[in-house]
Image (cartoon, rainbow, N blue to C red):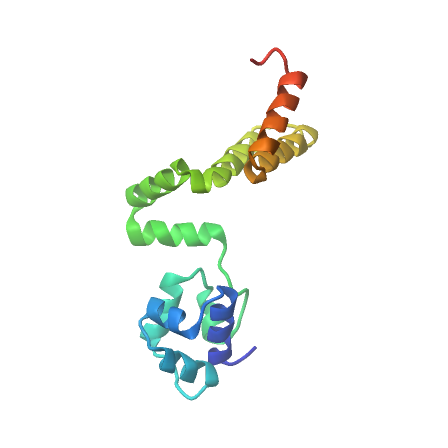
Length: 157
């Protein structure tokens, strides 16, 4: 893909947005998004920077098609630190992880931290299964899992 307009369309499609939704986020009308994607309207540097600031897009890929479309999660968080500062970003992450909506992210982060401490991979497989089953299950599945764990690990309770 070598056309800037085509890459902008790819970004919009990747994030499952209409031209209108995408335009609102970067500050352009639906008509201008349509013209950019068609190649009849060249985006300004301000528009390109707006896309980079609001989406986890690799600037080199957007500007000239080189590399991967998305930046790494580490780069995205680093950018957040640079934009917001360490304290504000850390407070935001803590608040998100406190919410039920992101409980699975908190569990996976904790699991990864445990795995880094040297837990054998065989044990890690079971832990991943338990956490995924808990996070993705309904009340009945969670009850079943809890009963299985209580039977297997009677000394824990």
